[in-house]
Length: 116
Image (cartoon, rainbow, N blue to C red; front, side):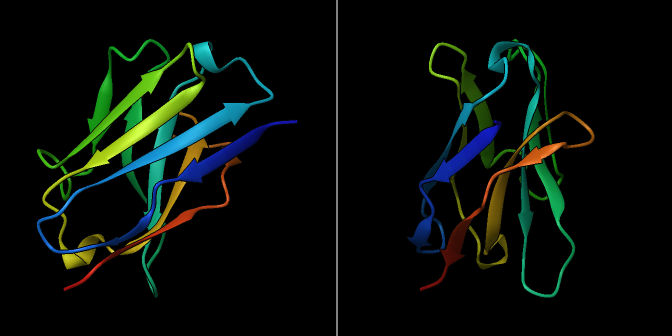
């Protein structure tokens, strides 16, 4: 069955960095676009970044452009989200998903908290 397992969340100070990882299994990862979403308390889930199957194409939410980078390693069936210059408003549960514009499978999420 499809499994998406996120890791790398935690507590970071404003201006700090975190790197999220998502290990995928149960489907052909190398032909699947992948995405990261986040959901903050009291807010709707929003798309943070997406990457095409080959990694050539990426897209980002305006709020994270220039600070976050999505990447993937098809040999390891893993997608990453490098988050730099973190802000308190980046605090949320971050979810890995399969898809470019619409997701059909989701991970369980990993908490990211940005606070001094």
